[in-house]
Image 1 (spheres, rainbow, N blue to C red):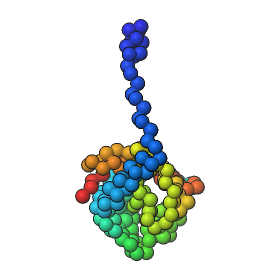
Image 2 (image 1 turned 135 degrees about the vertical axis):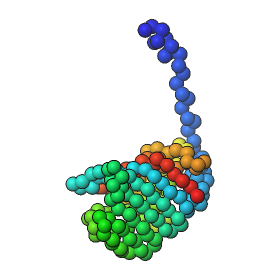
Image 3 (image 1 turned 180 degrees about the vertical axis):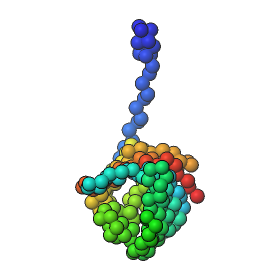
Image 4 (image 1 turned 135 degrees about the horizontal axis):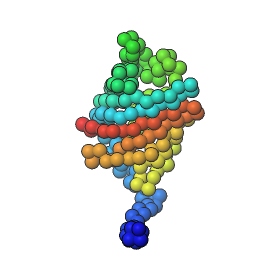
Amino acid sequence: MLLTLWLSGCVTAPKPEAAHSESQRQSLWKTHQQQLKALDDWSLKGRLGLRVPGQSGSLSLEWQQNNGQYLIYLDGPLGQSVAKIKGQSGAVELEASGQRYSGVSPEGLLFELTGWDLPVSLLRYWVVGLPSPESDSNIQLNNQGYPALISQQGWQVEYLQYKDFSGVTLPARIKVRQGEVQATLFARSWELK
């Protein structure tokens, strides 16, 4: 037992990461932002935890983005298809429970069908770690120059973890919330094209 304690005392703690100055973080963010803005064809697979007043659950998520067009698959337990959302600017189509619905915006269509007010159009940017260019935002950067928090249109987007995917650092865990609505995204894989 004494040997174990002695050996554990010999293990060196990892050196804390050197703190960057604000100007260094801003410079890192500018470079990273340019890299992210070049991503217009990607796919993401992961899990989405959703909590809205009176309900909560977890869904499997597959999101394919190609420029302004997107295709999102949401599956429930045991791979059961919950919804397929296909859209582009000004038009969205949702398939669920054998029914097909269409609308002008994903937010409007989702609210009409569920009563949930979720910023689907903004998520396209938030999932890659960018604020939407459509409105003002406030960004707090972490020490590596990546967003730790984006505040936009009353929503708080907290970046809890980043990972390297195909040579690009992308969010692996995100929490989006406003009031009683909260969504947590766990990215298992990114494919960049």
